[in-house]
Image 1 (cartoon, rainbow over the protein chains, first blue to last red):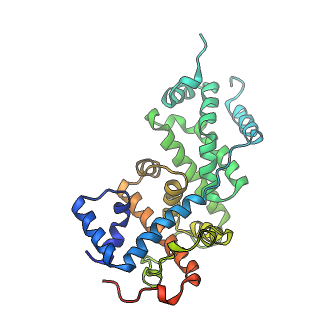
Image 2: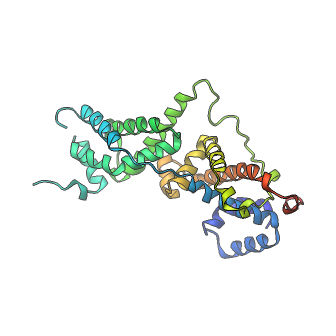
Image 3: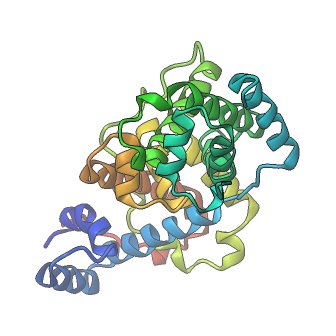
Length: 79
Length: 208
């Protein structure tokens, strides 16, 4: 296992999509390679921080009214 | 006999909309307006734009629903329509600017910021307004192909398979774009956080 391979396999490793032997190889590499360990930690945290960017916003009643008017116009007199 | 639209499956509603049933359309709007609006907002970062896109999307539902062959695939079709409408909106905004996928290096340079483990920084630094703004900008600047996948997966919480269906991609293609997108974001964060690094915390040495 080398560092370049770690980068390529990181995604599947985190999704727990790898066969046991490959996982073991990565684990032992991470234990001895500080750079890859740093990559692993910061990659995971990048995902966590990205999730926190979420600003969930609801469609307001006013927006819903505007949408309904628009759709009714398009649907015509028969609704 | 009156129909309880709330209890109908999406596919049943879709089949009714195809026959011009307005109440079925209303139920679909109730079920999906928040999701469509949020996806549009996260792709464009523009509230007014997101409303405009949502309106376009549901108008498209009315005009194009007959082109949907399998009614069970309504939601993935709807998300594809939403993503396409959002791209259209962004393209209109960036007229005259260079294409969104241009000017990005093919090979991401990992090496320069590879080593510093900023994950141990205190939360007030990691979650500061400044770092959040930086990350939002970095997401906005991702090439379109990566940005949509990162937003759908890491912000909106879609499954890889759902993203693949909505984007017309294979699951491996979704995973590869997601991975590359995350690596780019990680690098941007590393560049930003490196000012907090002490020299002795950065391991030296070359990549094996």
